[in-house]
Image (cartoon, rainbow, N blue to C red):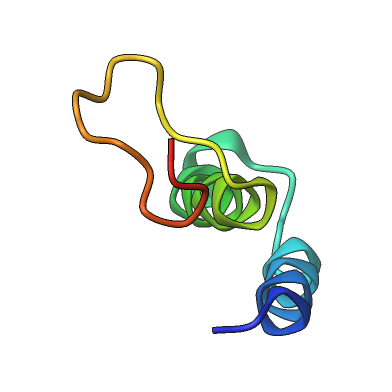
Length: 55
């Protein structure tokens, strides 16, 4: 998936947010994961190196 496709998907997910924390939890998790892919980051507690950024 290209960076532009990821950004587009994030924008679509943001439009689905309702303002209800419990309803939005899954959507916000998806947004967070996509933004991490866009930025090339990985979770701090991950023992796996990021394939995308090569670290």
